[in-house]
Image (tube, helix red, strand yellow):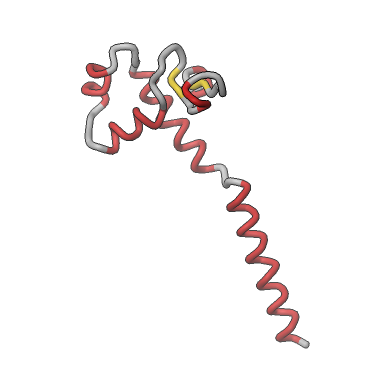
Length: 94
């Protein structure tokens, strides 16, 4: 299984801190946007010669990993809704 960390870099002094394919200035978002627009990986590789198949796969893996980790804001929202439900339950019991 591929380790996306070997192919993706995030550096605040490089591409405004956006996730990029290592050794290129190709942002992960560009790869994902092109795939979402219907380009297949071969077309993407032709239009970005410095991109590799591993880089495309790493971009997809990176996105999947980012989506599976809840953001701090989502965790706060979730815990707030649980606290609110607990308060409602306590007040209805009393």
